[in-house]
Image (cartoon, rainbow, N blue to C red; front, top):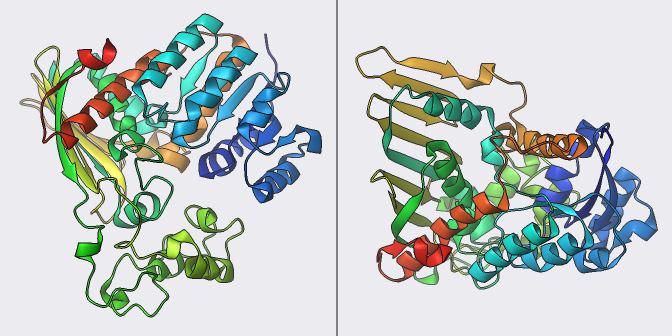
Length: 428
C-alpha cells in the first residue's frame, strides 16, 4: 500500500533533532513527523515550530509519548543508550515499528529481551548501523561478494575518532562514563563490528582486546592546567583540547568561522559566538579534559577469531587528526584498501594492476556518516510504505545483536587483561 508514513520522534538530541527529523523535509511524500518528545522543553518548542507539531502531540519524555494511544506508524527512538530498550519494548507492544538508535543496550539481557518482544509482536525494528548505507561500503560489499579477491583471510580495520571528537563526546560529553552510558567499544564501534561482520559475511568465534584511558586523567594534566579552560589556564597555549580552540577557533567547526551545526548545537540550542562562549564558561564542554568524570577508553584494539579460521583486527583511537575509517581486506586472490577519508576503494587482484574506484563519482549525497543517514531513513520508509522485504543493507535486531556480542565480549576481555572470550557465552 502506498502511503505517507507517520513518525513519532522520541529524543531530540543530535541524532533525533538534527539528523533524522530533517529527513521529513527531504522526503515529504514518504514521511511526516506527527509527535515529538524530549526532556528539554526548549528543544520541543523548536522542533514543534519547525515541523508544525500541535501542542497536544508534544511530550516531556519518551515515556509520556509512549503512554498515549498509538499516534504514528513508526517511532524513532533516539534517546540515551541505557534508555533504549525500556522505551522500545512498550512501544513495540503499542504496535509501533521502530527505528532504534545504536547501541541497542549495553545490557546483554536487554538485547536478548528486545529481540524476543519484537518477534512476538511481529514488528519491524531497524537498528541505526548507518554505515551499511554509504556509497563506499555498499560498493565494497558488492566487490567482496563478487569473489574478486577470493576468500577473505584477514582484515585490518581502524576507526580514527579524531582528537576533538574524542574530547567532545567521550571526555566532556554524553558518552564519557560507562556507568551512565555504554563502554566506548560498544557505543562507538558497534558500527564497525556490524560493518565487518556484514562485509565479510562471517561469524565471530572469540575475541581478545586491550585498551585504556591513556591520557584523559588528572595525573596526565600539564603543569598549570585549570579545571576549566577559561579560568586562567596556564597550559592552554600548548593544549589542542582547549575548548576555545575547538568550539570557537577551529576552522572546520568553530563558531568564529560561522559554523552553527554539530558539535556546537550540543553546547547551545542556537549557536553563536556569544552563546558558545557562555557555554564554555559555564557548561560541561568547558571543562578541562584532564579533570572530567570520564572513564571510557581513548584507545582500544580488538582481535576477532572467526569461525572459519580467518581473523579480523580493529583499532579504535582518539588520537588522530581527523575522524574517519579505513580497512584493508586480504584475500586468497587479492586485496582491497577502502579509505573513507579519500573516498576511494583500491582493488588489487594478484598479478594485476590496481583498480582505483573514486566513490565520490558514485553518488551526490555524502552528508551524515558519508551519506548513510539519509539513505537509511528513506530505505526504511520505502520498506514500510510498500510492505517490502528488508534489503541486503537492512540491519535487523537479530543481525545487530551479533555486533553487540562482539563489542561486549571485547570489553569483558579488556577489563580482564585481554583474556580470550567465546562469543557462544553471549549467544547462549
